Image (cartoon, rainbow, N blue to C red):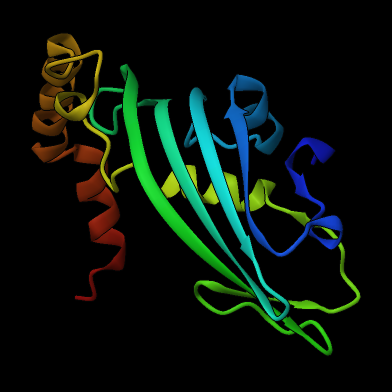
Length: 171
């Protein structure tokens, strides 16, 4: 990832520090996932540094571009969430826990790009549908009609399947 998303905490004084980031289409393209096609998300990061740990508060506001899980229409979803990450300094780095990240006392920077990406994905609902988006009220009627036709066709018994069933039936 780019250095734009690195926090050089080694040179920070103790206390609260604020950062601002903009997550745009370029940021999401670097990850190359099909869950998010792009976005425009402003991130306000508050870092509270002490001698033994840092508390990071991420406030995300903006929108993400994705597709409807039902009709594949392009959607714009609102993002307005806060997330927290606790960073503890230890003699040696340890595996991460749910909301705790361990860093060695020798570390001096923290790349938050993966956390930013994860937090934006967590802002999306599990099922993305048109009615919840900013730019659409309902799913594409033509696509829904085609899906219904396909379901009716699949419900019919195909002669090919009957022949295959005969191969596996013992008499």
